[in-house]
Length: 94
Image (cartoon, rainbow, N blue to C red; front, side, top):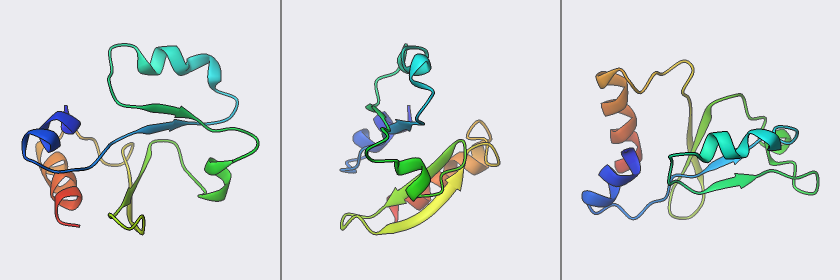
């Protein structure tokens, strides 16, 4: 939904997910009915460890791939309109 809103408003950015090593069996559940790209972390990359990812973290990068913010969706429920609007603003004002 947010990806489509970003596209509709002319923002050239991509939302994607990266699954944690060891949770590969849930990839089909996570992608069912969704259309954002979904990647799988691997033991060669170990991105979750390298970035110290917490469950439901969203890493926001600018166009130069500089990390700008990290927002946790367990603590910030996007079903709350104010939180959604703040998150959208964060994405669109980089």
